[in-house]
Length: 209
Image (cartoon, rainbow, N blue to C red; front, top):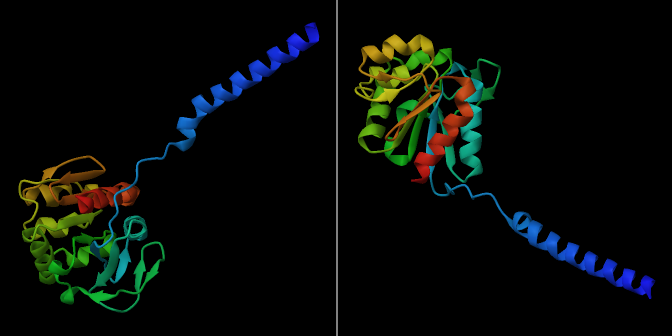
């Protein structure tokens, strides 16, 4: 009799344990992280220098945008193979002079020392100004925010850049920030390669709105 009672108690305990596990673990097992907004149908153009663009500042944001469905085009002042500061080889798909901001939802200038080629480039300035006036997402990272500053697009705007560009930005009316990535409306700036993933996330957020 005692053995029978013991067996019944064991079965009851086992049943309660199964129910408890089901109740405690069912919710967490079925929980899913919030879905990232789809960027299907969105288009972005990333503008790089023919040489010495910063590899991560191109690779990280473009990979993130593509993973969420955004179509990415690489533009440059030359269609010859471009070389990054860390050795990346990229074949541009469009000439900068042919870029029409109206064809894209975002226009992004990639940094690296080569980006200084565009600091005073009228074509780069025209593309950036058209993007801004058309309400497109406009991004620049590392030293590239100086392109936007010299195009007159940072006046009164919060922005960041590689620290060497601080005087350039403030001289052109920007409100300097020490944050890694700064968003002011549809303007997004980043301060260097370490900020590339966060820069990509901010671009994606702006594109999804």
